[in-house]
Length: 292
Ligand SMILES: [Zn+2]
Image (cartoon, rainbow, N blue to C red; front, side, top):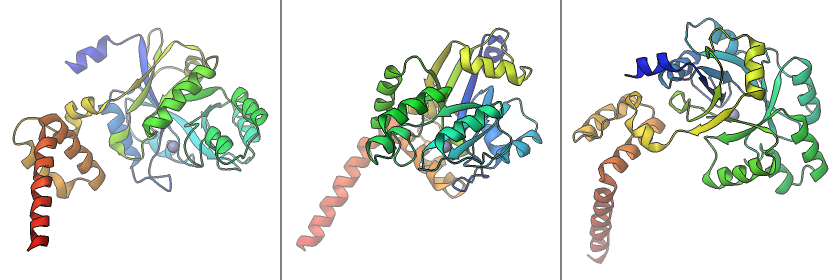
């Protein structure tokens, strides 16, 4: 009884602190869809963090939803490194990375360092691979930000492992999580669970939410593919016959989602094995054709 479980949940709030909408140049998710998926995934708080734009928040405010929306932005700084600004309702003007952090703070916002090892947009990648920053500069930037994104659901396994080590190195910093969703169904793939007395994100003031983000006990949770496979939201069933539904749905579902659903179905039913057999039959046939 998910509804009942939700009613009993009074001591924590679940937040996805990094996601995009169709206000970003590289994302087509309508704001209403993002909110709908956030509700489906039982998130209490999302931060909309479009690339260098803050306009999605205005749209989100006009949509009725149980989910609290934090106005945010993912700023592209001068050398390409990204920073997240929370509680920001106007575009950030500064470009130099330390100036951006100052500007976020001057406006009463909170600054987070996302995906440190991502190519071209991660601070540590830009230091280690592109030599864009000295060690001193990196140390200064890390001390200046309020939060470090300890889990980004879009990162590769290798980047995730490096980020785990990074978190250990900067254990004194405050760690968060975000899905970095660029598709509505990706919302909630990483979440930050904050312990909050009398948790009700809809009635908390901005200041209460800021204090909770900066101080409260937390847990970082990653949604696994198994959970995705059992999610009703993907209308995916592991029973025999799901394949047919899947094939029928193909024309109605965006290609990326369909491939994801298919892969979950294949894993959950042992169909991977069948598929491999099929592939080997096909390659046998091809080699026979060549011989002929
Ligand atoms: Zn992002």
